[in-house]
Image (cartoon, rainbow, N blue to C red):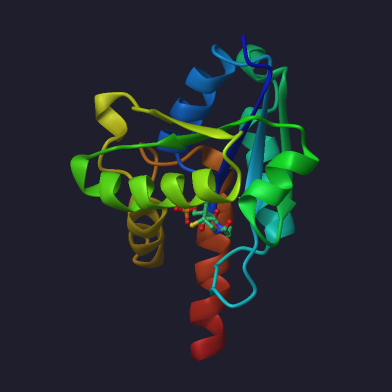
Length: 169
Ligand code: PNS
């Protein structure tokens, strides 16, 4: 059995779909490290630290999350995987349209580090349309996010956008 898997992503913010994939991954690996990619060139609503904190809050107290660690990185994912001694990358695939991008990324990572494999997991059907960008759009217009993200994420999003809108006025 493989031991350490890395579950990378932007997680800006983490959604119920991400949490579904994470829980599935914990059943396959002894340790799962959720790792937030921080790219200073890419604009994000939450800072790396905020994203890490939100993920920690969302998994806190969950029995399945006892072997989950959360961290952040900047740079190449495979380098971070090697640093963490992870030999598997976990990615969620919601729909066929995700596959092309995921396939390209997996092949790139494979070329860079042949010893690291990528596995794809499907979320429950109810999460297949949820994405962080859709969640941000609904949050911006103050929509009901209760079935998209955990309460702590909903609160953080509403606060962010309230401040942002306040600053524009
Ligand atoms: O949640 P996302 O935005 O789809 O995650 C993409 C992510 C962060 C996993 C990917 O962009 C990434 O691994 N970035 C780090 C830079 C890198 O290693 N790139 C080579 C693989 S394409």
